[in-house]
Image (tube, rainbow, N blue to C red; front, side, top):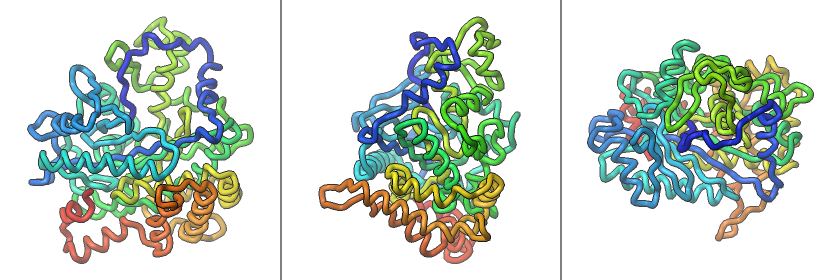
Length: 457
């Protein structure tokens, strides 16, 4: 989740709805300036007893952040405490229960993305070795209850933790017990945005299935392959979901702005602190009628903050954010941007991907979204097929898109190699979650703690 480092006091004030819409248009870039941003989270645990370390404890999360500053990362403070780090490779931040996230820099190609990921994980592992900390690549804590987990000292999280139980039964699990990999990609025009949004939203359940990696809860199988994805179905219906309006004629910046205006607020950030505005209306804020800031109108930063509190399967800010994948080990981090760059950054591939999904009805798209967390690649798609039946085709389209980009590394290799993990999953029809379940029922003999040895970085 986003980390604010400054007050909105000097930001331009928003006087009209047109300025909200213009924020999306400002994201347009010519193709030669399209970049790749990759975000990945991992669970932090104590190697001695596998507990999730608190912020303050000796060798805990604060010590981990301090240790990473040796690599040139600069501390970001909130309330006098380090809650993030900034540097040339992006931002390192904390999720609510201490999950560690890298929000990577905008990069030109996947070779750079994988190099950035490698640098980060090597740094994290080195500091973790000094502190006795390990890092787990899964979509959900396999053995921790909510009460087992610490809370990080970030103001927005305190507001969200209070609000989540009012609007859904699993929102606290989303905040405290899950990890994800996400990819942020650019668009060139409103029409380009709309096509990319539609393709990526329709195919987001495929990414969920391919990256399914959260089959355990409280030390036992939970009946799902991606329980993390299931959690989003009962987090907050006002800010999650498949957004049917994206597929309607005329969809563009204005329609998404109207959607975001109807998403209830969480907070307003002023003078280094978060003001609780949970459940209030941004439309009222736009009219100067927000009860917690009477007479004050929002700024551009306030709108940016608000956009970050909507959680649909694909999210628009001044770029598109792919949100469907569980967290996972090293090789999967590079595979997610490879899938979406291959599908969305070459026009021939984008058109071919649209041909795959364009005839799906909204009911079919929703049925696929609802069934994927439990069924994975066996989830039904239109025409009596299963998701596994189109997985190889879609990955093949992504491969053709990456080949057409022809972005080579120093050895002369293009970017298609980063799809190898997904090609293996599609060929076998077996997700990592299913492989973990096989181990649980086999060699692990029902001992889920074995996952720490097998799935840590």
